[in-house]
Image (cartoon, rainbow, N blue to C red):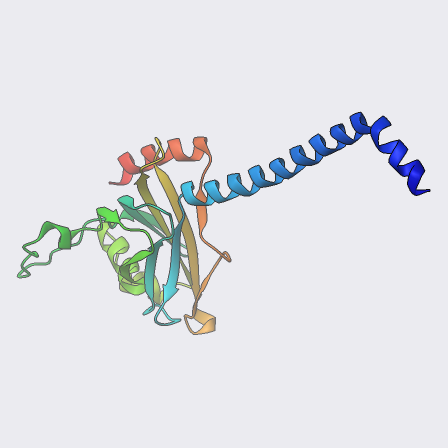
Length: 211
């Protein structure tokens, strides 16, 4: 049997070469797939919007940059909805009240600017985001909350990313209900990344309309 196998190898060398070549092709395809997945993870931007430091409306809204490079925040948009009202505005720049001095450093007056990778910024409490959105759209935030059965807050981040020619975006909604003690919960398990070209082109209209 061993002799027959030895005789078979030379006569089948062409088939063995083909098999070896196809095996190498399969291995390289696997390596290529692994490389492409790793490259995509490194080049695709990811912005994470979360609730932290409390479950009520006093909880804070964190925006984290989980991309491999810095993102430049262009706009922060807040939409507030109840059963009776729906309003939206930009909260990118901070408000200054009568008798209150503005911070001398312009960087401390706005969310505009670069956010390095693995870093986060705090937009404030959800209560303050609701108050700001109501005030900037001419509504009484106290009355809004007193008559609300629920309050839904959607935070949208518009940003520039070095490897992308279009704006990038991320959004997430949170809801608090009166009959549940105004405990705030996210409507989705994770932040929704705005990735399609069509959606990202629409971000420019949003930026022009609300900023």
